[in-house]
Image 1 (cartoon, rainbow, N blue to C red):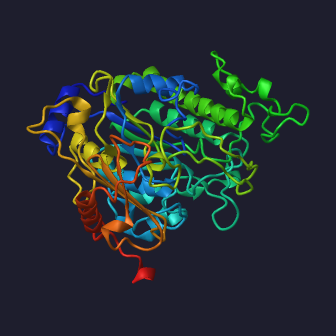
Image 2 (image 1 turned 90 degrees about the vertical axis):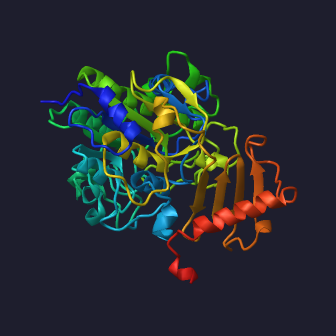
Image 3 (image 1 turned 45 degrees about the horizontal axis):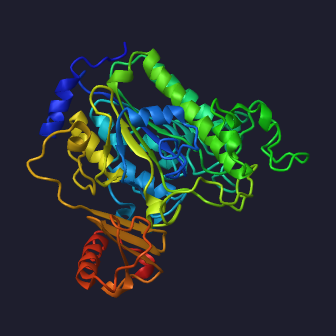
Length: 482
């Protein structure tokens, strides 16, 4: 029999007390949705040129984070989400997209936290925290897993590039023969999520739903499954069969209004993704679980921008194909455009529809969920419990300014730290040795990070440098730099 929470107010009271164990039956299902390379402007509630009605409806019904931060790339963000810690705490292999194990077996994760709290745990979609089957999701607290162990993959044959980990479409960490070739990865992922939601169970579920879209390769074939996405040789600027593929069309004509075919392809991929999210929400409604489910949503990093192609099966070269954003930088940047993404939290009747303007980070989801489900506190975390922001609880005092911290690439060549409205950024392989090594920006006055104030604010710069060094001292050293 499916568990139906009967006294959700008790769960909320337990959030206030933070660590008391909630009785069985009083906790929500938890659905965490992560999309891939969906930039700030690639969603409708930020950009009216984008058709994403299901995502927009969810966002507007809950807490929309106007300053929602992640890491600059896929693996690092997934490390931060899964562990509540900045990826550099685990070493250079966790600081950029990687097929190597991101963190050791035994590391506490959201999976183990929810599993120990009595949840049935599922990973559906992209893992990318260790591509070998002996480092897959079931080794980190997930009862069941399905999808891609590696990073991006061909949308129809589900293979990752070439080489050792090319074949990685799996169930419960075992590669599926034939990789379920011929069905779009977005459809397979949504179908599996619906199956999980519709199962009868005696415990609440935790579903980590990680879509591969809208990462390249962009490939939207509709019913023309045997014909990869390609430009129509007889109609410049149009995709072959575009008129008959539903993802290129919407009731308002937004997608067809876009004249750039590559941007239009991205909009079609967003439409497809949005439809998949809608199917998942319908499954919650159909099974009577919608009001009993907390939904958290984020993208994993900023927009990809351009792509040379030929890395994955049927992989197109694309140039400037994302929607524009009002920020500096993109994927792999530690400027705002690379790390500030769409994010929201929805729980009908429990989380009010509102904008949350305080900075939050994906590392916050672990301590927030730990408190919500009454799990034992995680000893090491870089995140904060966001219960007061989500549920409107009064705090004894205003939240103090917080530090947010980024180190990207295995060579640690892009760094940033935010404290309050101040932010420092440094690019280059050399570690910053003195305050003058940084750029300094005031985000409230300069959200596009155009005016470097380092020379004008020496005391602020010195304080920010000191804070960075303190954070860096907590990281696992890179053995190649010792």
